[in-house]
Length: 112
Image (cartoon, rainbow, N blue to C red; front, side, top):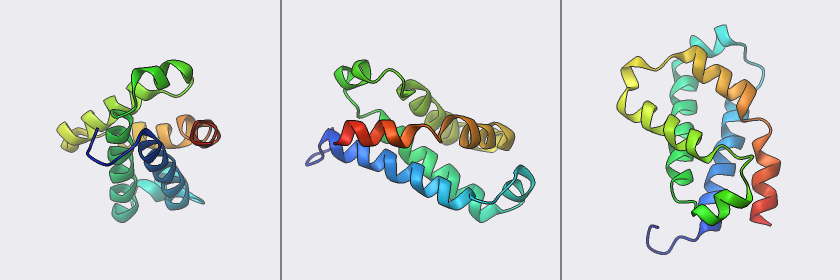
């Protein structure tokens, strides 16, 4: 872990990224999202930060909260960082719409 950071800090980072992504994309459909470079870049950055923070969550916490896709978050971060020119915006949009909305309550439970 980074010096001075606790597990709770990383959980809060993930939660904040989820909240930002929701804020960035509220009222958008795929067409609007995919034509707005600022929103695309903001969402991609939040997903990267979220994935990096997920890598710092210890296995013990991952095991007590298997409903949170820790490995998928970290894996998506790796794809976004290393294959940035090949990122499929439809896949990103589907993740944002289908996989992320249920995560904030789960993270809030872990944080409290």
